[in-house]
Image (cartoon, rainbow, N blue to C red; front, side, top):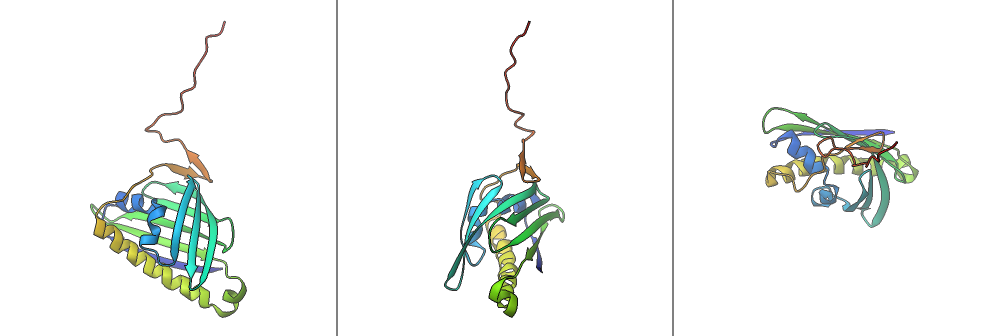
Length: 170
């Protein structure tokens, strides 16, 4: 298992940084090698990535998501990895975004390490590009403030629970 870590301090409020991170469809705008991300369900993303002439597709499950604090995921298909991004307020208008990826090397990458070095460089550049992207916009392009625990979506307390009719008995 290889661990890649990178943090960036961004000149936007923690809520803005978090909200932008939840907009997975925007990742190709700042993350090299990401061609497309679909978000078919609240807890599932489908990624299409490219390294050179090789295209990879994989699914990732969001295991935990707490607004303005953290988001954790794991892949369901190859290439296997899991990750966590955390958000920390550094005061009004400033936040730290920290990413940790745990990658499982396989095949040629395990023998040469070249794919892991490519991944490390892309993660580091991607975090710097995220900083430039969010600071350049000054605000998020969208948001989802829901919470996920153990891979399950929690109801939004601001929206109340589902309406369940009660019938008179007696």
